[in-house]
Amino acid sequence: MTTVAAYAAPAAKAPLERTTIERRAVGEYDVLIDIKFAGICHSDIHQARDGWAEGIFPMVPGHEIAGVVTEAGPGVTKFAVGDRVGVGCMVDSCRECDNCKAGLEQYCVKGNTGTYNAVDKNGEPTYGGYSSHIVVDENYTLRIPDGLALDEAAPLLCAGITTYSPLKHWNAGPGKKVAVLGMGGLGHMGVKIAHGLGAEVTVLSQSLRKQEDGLKLGADHYYATSDPKTFEELAGTFDIILSTVSAPLDFGAYLSLLKTDGALVNVGAPEEPISVNLFSLIGGRKSLSGSGIGGIQETQEMLDFCAEHGLGAEIELIAASEINEAYERVLNSDVRYRFVIDAATI
Ligand code: NAP
Ligand code: ZN
Ligand code: ZN
Image (cartoon, rainbow, N blue to C red; front, side, top):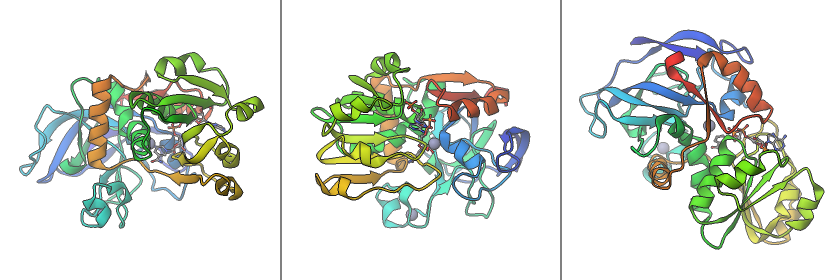
């Protein structure tokens, strides 16, 4: 066991503060990672504030981790000391179920082990990336290609894969009209990736405040959802709507923007349930679906795709002492477009 520095929420809804945690000794198939950067995902805030379910406290959030390998266990074959690596939302899964075997570890039937706010195989709580170091099994560690800067790569480990996976699954590409709903951390990567895949991209944001940025990131069109005319003008337009919104929405209104056979794919994880009038699906053979992060192999594919297309995240680098302030700004949709913690300040 090694004692390392971290930022933790000592209890639900309490501000995060500096502390120390224990990391397990490096096992046969583990790598020890010197964390350089950790992104702040809205999921960190939902969990640190007990918005989803009862959390495990103290909680060290962070599942957008980029760093460098400083030690490798004797059985490690995929990584060596000095390699640039990343860790996303999960650090283990059963490895035996049909989903794990199919590279869909995120949907492991026994449940994947979250990078934080979970209990690992040894019965120990997991602690995330707001920390100086982490020990992770090499099979749940990703390689960050040379073309990506580590700070801009960190958010790809959640925001990147969570948008890439559904965009690929629902065949976003040339000839497809894709709307990205919400332009925050996930949304801005959704815009970049959908554009990189060759789709025609529309941003649906609450206002036109970020329009100039959206068009620069690769959107072809940008609309404010606060304007009722948007819904008239865009009725029946999209093949795919990717909702990244963190709050409950009137999905019925957005389903009206789909073409026949279109899909509204939700990745947002609001804290309250929503109700949907099913007639908005029946009239047009539409689907309402969900998607969670992505498998390990697909996450590597996404990192390689982003490196090839020069798609790092747009980030605001902060010191660890600014985490609580950053949380407030994310809650106010005041993020352009991902806060990333400089782990040297932890
Ligand atoms: P974020 O940076 O806060 O972005 C969310 C965006 O949603 C905001 O920037 C805003 O965009 C829009 N929004 C917020 N409140 C709204 C409201 N009341 N009405 C309409 N639009 C609103 O959050 P994020 O880190 O991208 O995460 C987004 C959601 O995805 C969170 O719930 C998170 O937990 C979830 N998530 C899910 C997965 C998964 O695997 N499915 C993975 C990661 C995160 P505009 O300012 O453009 O309107
Ligand atoms: Zn996340
Ligand atoms: Zn499994």
